[in-house]
Every structure is written in C-alpha cells, then in structure tokens.
Image 1 (cartoon, one colour):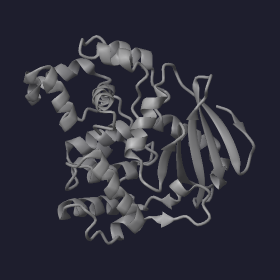
Image 2: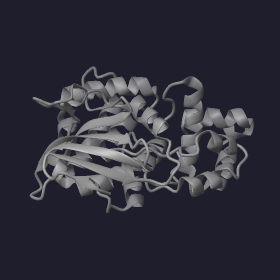
Image 3: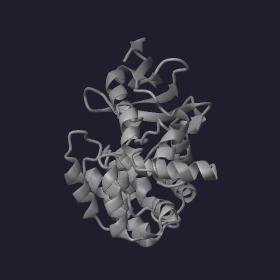
Length: 312
C-alpha cells in the first residue's frame, strides 16, 4: 500500500491476488448504486464518504476506485479531509472490494463440482463485493425484500432524499448526498415511500437499534455470530437478509442465502430435485467454506445471460 501527498489528496495502491474480475465487480456495484450517494462511471467506483477523526468527529471527502492498467492493484484516490486517514480507509476498502481473497484456491475448490467448473472458467476472478457501510447494506437488504434490484434502488433513492443530507459545494454532482444516519432514518417520515407498512416498521426499528449502539454492524471487532443472531431476532428480518448481510458486510466467505429466488431457480433448472430445501442443503455442503462465492457465480451467470444486475 503506498500513498502520496499528505493533506487533501491521497492516492493508494491496494494489491490483490490475480485474477480479479474488476468489470464484474463494477457491474455489481453499478446495478445497486444508491442514487446521489455513489456512482460507477468511466471504469471507476465513486462516492462521498465520512470518516471519524482523532477526536471522534466525522470528516468528509470523496473516494474514487479504479483498477491499475498494468499492476495487480486497485488505485484509490481520496479527496478532502478524509485523505489524512488513508491507511485506515485503505484497509476498509480492501475488505469492501474483497482484495484478500485467494481467487485461484476458491475457484479450484468450487470447480470440483461439475456445475461450477464452467462458471469458474467464465469468471475466474469473481469476488464477493462488500459494502462501504453495514448499516447501508442492511437498509438496502430490507428494502429489497420481494422486489427487484431496480425497484429497491428507486426506493433507496427516495429514502436518501427524505432523510439524507445534500452536500453543498460538492465537486461531484452524482455523489452529492450523504446516506442517512441511523438516527435520521429512524425519525424520518416514510409515508408513501413505496414500501408496505410492516417493512417500514422493520426498517426504522433496525435503524433505532443501530443508533442506540446495540447493533455495532460496522465494528470489525464485533462478534459475527452474535450480530447474525441479533439481526435474525429482529422483526421483518429473515434468513435471506441475514445471510446476504453476512456475505457482503460481515465478510463471511461461507454465507449462503439459499432462499434467494434467483439462486433457487438457477439450481432447480440444473436439477429439479434442488427445489427441495433438504436436497439443496446437502449439495451445497460440498461448496463449503466458499458458499458465498458459489452464490456470486450463480448470480453472475444469470446477470451475464440477462445483461443486467440480477440476484442480491
């Protein structure tokens, strides 16, 4: 990891093990980008960010992530006061972009199953895209229950406009909104937001738990199993949501959102007996400890066929 400059502009090189499928990582983020908060354009992921300063106060800035044209690394540019926290932000982004995964080992393991051999051949560097914020991801997961990826993105955009903060004099128009804080979302008027009342209640109940400090989703030191149990115990959050969050925010490589409709359809198309939960669970045991990557390969196959973001 390297850095240049010191104050308002910093560039980081974050290495990874080849292969790394940057185009598909970008496609995944682009299909789920929160309008006004984050964007994918010209081969780069970009968003406005905040980071805690030494005194605990939040400082603001913008990040941009691209792939180096020759070296096996991602190039991160930080603008604004956040630039002085480049080292810590770099570690956070390494998790978000799944840079520490051993792609060859994961691919070899999954390819033992004949279903996955052609999928690994087609996308040998596939990664599990993470999230800048676990809170944001759970919000999206709750909103995305039983609706399409596109519909979820539309509703999230409305939530940002109601409860988020528009940044003044921000240099990038497509990232000029700050995602709502847990407290702001918990208190926001969600009338006619486009979600059923029970889902709104679940969303704001979750936001209150995070705001109170009872659910430290973005603390890397927090116990992963305890967080999963706490999420599952909350009204309106089921196994799919918990496993999806475990994949992307808690960074569990073996998380398995087995009730996902796209996954179930894909697997049943290969073998109708996979429609039975017990049969599917038995087959998926062979994919451990990388079931999260198995899910991404199946979602990716559907996305390749449809030419758009599908699944998750």
